[in-house]
Image (cartoon, rainbow, N blue to C red):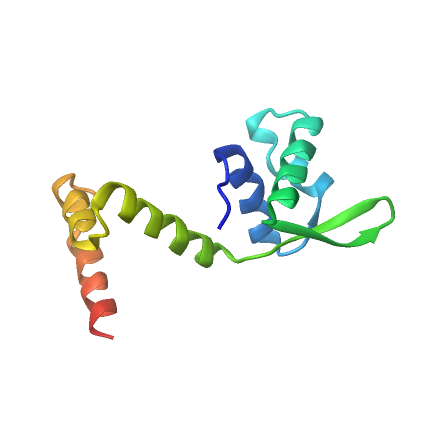
Length: 118
Protein backbone atom coordinates (compact mmCIF):
# COMPACT_ATOMS: atom_id res chain seq x y z
CA UNK A 1 0.00 0.00 0.00
CA UNK A 2 1.21 3.50 -0.74
CA UNK A 3 2.47 5.95 1.86
CA UNK A 4 -0.06 8.72 2.42
CA UNK A 5 0.76 12.00 4.14
CA UNK A 6 -1.40 13.38 6.95
CA UNK A 7 -2.85 16.04 4.64
CA UNK A 8 -3.59 13.48 1.92
CA UNK A 9 -5.28 11.32 4.53
CA UNK A 10 -7.66 14.15 5.44
CA UNK A 11 -8.72 14.37 1.79
CA UNK A 12 -9.01 10.59 1.55
CA UNK A 13 -11.25 10.55 4.65
CA UNK A 14 -13.68 12.87 2.85
CA UNK A 15 -13.71 10.58 -0.18
CA UNK A 16 -14.25 7.51 2.01
CA UNK A 17 -17.17 9.19 3.78
CA UNK A 18 -18.83 10.37 0.57
CA UNK A 19 -17.99 7.22 -1.48
CA UNK A 20 -17.87 9.38 -4.63
CA UNK A 21 -17.24 13.10 -4.69
CA UNK A 22 -15.92 16.05 -6.67
CA UNK A 23 -12.97 18.27 -5.87
CA UNK A 24 -15.34 21.14 -5.05
CA UNK A 25 -17.14 19.00 -2.47
CA UNK A 26 -13.80 17.97 -0.97
CA UNK A 27 -12.70 21.60 -0.75
CA UNK A 28 -15.87 22.44 1.18
CA UNK A 29 -15.38 19.52 3.56
CA UNK A 30 -11.81 20.48 4.49
CA UNK A 31 -12.48 24.19 5.00
CA UNK A 32 -11.43 23.96 8.65
CA UNK A 33 -7.82 23.34 7.56
CA UNK A 34 -7.73 26.71 5.77
CA UNK A 35 -6.11 25.16 2.72
CA UNK A 36 -6.41 26.94 -0.60
CA UNK A 37 -8.38 25.21 -3.32
CA UNK A 38 -5.11 24.74 -5.22
CA UNK A 39 -3.63 22.92 -2.24
CA UNK A 40 -6.61 20.57 -2.04
CA UNK A 41 -6.49 19.93 -5.78
CA UNK A 42 -2.76 19.14 -5.46
CA UNK A 43 -3.51 16.65 -2.68
CA UNK A 44 -6.17 15.05 -4.87
CA UNK A 45 -3.71 14.75 -7.77
CA UNK A 46 -1.12 13.18 -5.46
CA UNK A 47 -3.63 10.63 -4.19
CA UNK A 48 -4.63 9.79 -7.74
CA UNK A 49 -0.99 9.47 -8.83
CA UNK A 50 -0.30 7.18 -5.86
CA UNK A 51 -3.25 5.00 -6.84
CA UNK A 52 -5.25 5.67 -3.66
CA UNK A 53 -8.15 7.26 -5.56
CA UNK A 54 -9.37 7.30 -9.12
CA UNK A 55 -11.49 9.60 -11.22
CA UNK A 56 -14.42 7.60 -12.54
CA UNK A 57 -16.34 9.97 -14.75
CA UNK A 58 -16.75 13.57 -15.59
CA UNK A 59 -19.68 15.56 -14.26
CA UNK A 60 -19.71 18.74 -16.34
CA UNK A 61 -16.23 20.14 -15.79
CA UNK A 62 -15.61 18.22 -12.55
CA UNK A 63 -14.18 14.77 -12.13
CA UNK A 64 -15.81 12.47 -9.63
CA UNK A 65 -13.35 10.70 -7.35
CA UNK A 66 -13.72 7.43 -5.52
CA UNK A 67 -11.34 5.47 -3.29
CA UNK A 68 -9.41 2.53 -4.75
CA UNK A 69 -9.38 0.72 -1.41
CA UNK A 70 -11.59 1.11 1.61
CA UNK A 71 -10.83 2.64 4.98
CA UNK A 72 -10.65 -0.67 6.81
CA UNK A 73 -8.16 -2.08 4.31
CA UNK A 74 -5.99 1.02 4.81
CA UNK A 75 -6.25 0.78 8.60
CA UNK A 76 -5.16 -2.85 8.55
CA UNK A 77 -2.12 -2.09 6.39
CA UNK A 78 -1.06 0.94 8.45
CA UNK A 79 -1.53 -0.99 11.69
CA UNK A 80 0.55 -3.91 10.38
CA UNK A 81 3.27 -1.43 9.46
CA UNK A 82 3.13 0.12 12.93
CA UNK A 83 3.29 -3.31 14.57
CA UNK A 84 6.34 -4.21 12.54
CA UNK A 85 8.06 -0.86 12.99
CA UNK A 86 7.45 -0.24 16.71
CA UNK A 87 6.38 -3.52 18.27
CA UNK A 88 8.36 -6.22 16.45
CA UNK A 89 5.08 -7.60 15.05
CA UNK A 90 3.62 -8.10 18.55
CA UNK A 91 -0.02 -7.07 18.90
CA UNK A 92 0.28 -8.01 22.57
CA UNK A 93 3.04 -5.43 23.09
CA UNK A 94 0.99 -2.77 21.34
CA UNK A 95 -2.08 -3.50 23.48
CA UNK A 96 0.05 -3.49 26.63
CA UNK A 97 1.34 -0.06 25.66
CA UNK A 98 -2.23 1.23 25.35
CA UNK A 99 -3.21 -0.41 28.64
CA UNK A 100 -0.22 1.07 30.47
CA UNK A 101 -0.93 4.50 29.01
CA UNK A 102 -4.50 4.28 30.28
CA UNK A 103 -5.95 4.53 26.79
CA UNK A 104 -8.03 1.34 27.03
CA UNK A 105 -11.07 1.07 29.24
CA UNK A 106 -12.46 -2.12 30.76
CA UNK A 107 -15.25 -1.93 28.18
CA UNK A 108 -12.67 -1.70 25.38
CA UNK A 109 -10.89 -4.76 26.73
CA UNK A 110 -14.16 -6.69 26.99
CA UNK A 111 -14.88 -5.90 23.34
CA UNK A 112 -11.39 -7.01 22.34
CA UNK A 113 -11.83 -10.30 24.21
CA UNK A 114 -15.21 -10.85 22.54
CA UNK A 115 -13.65 -10.23 19.12
CA UNK A 116 -10.80 -12.66 19.87
CA UNK A 117 -13.27 -15.33 20.97
CA UNK A 118 -15.10 -15.12 17.62
